[in-house]
Length: 294
Image 1 (cartoon, one colour):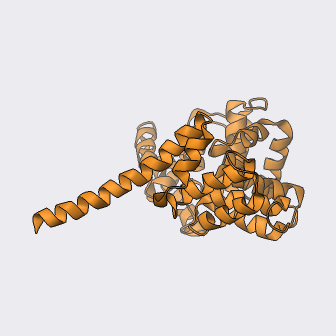
Image 2 (cartoon, rainbow, N blue to C red):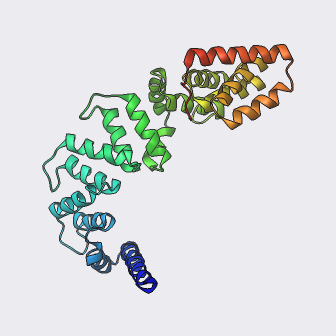
Image 3 (cartoon, one colour):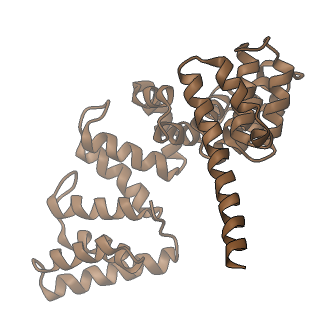
């Protein structure tokens, strides 16, 4: 019986390794521009339902590599992979719908696919979705949503999104989003002014944006604002205010807040500590469970 179980397990694991190996070998062949080899590996029986292989095969049809270019065949393969919730395939299919290649042009369908892919953290889709919101394509122009998706694309390494983030005019978009209360934009602006990234370093403006994020419940902004009050950066030095923010993050379960509070209380007297605790409790009573992990 043990031999039988071992044999079955070996067969299953062996199949899995072959499955992964065929796809990886196909990708290696593509990198060498050995399209014949790549095509033969992606079309093996083991790859029939492999979303990754289906997608790369779709690209080969889309680009006319080893086969005659066929957007229809590419769309068919992308659809099979997209049904398996593979973000890269969802984006590829969305692009075909956006351009009307192999399928009827349908911007609504394109955006739905981009949204699915973007939620799967595929940076190309996040960037495309951000541009749609920025330019007012399909849905109403919305800088707040544009900023959100472009920031996520930049975070995931999309070069165009990273370049766009550095542009001066992009900071204006971020400010529009920040004014509407977007925590990501608020923290982004706070960091930009604190470090002097693409703007002149300005601790007062950094404190302004971090304060807004802190009031909205951002733990990272609360800790940074506490540190700025402790050191007198962008604001007058104020241990009570600093301890207040550290106490708030500590009560939200933040380890750093607890460490910072303990450290700063060594320089405070009992009346100052009491005042900081009262202010922290007042803030928590007013805001309730509003803290985030950002």
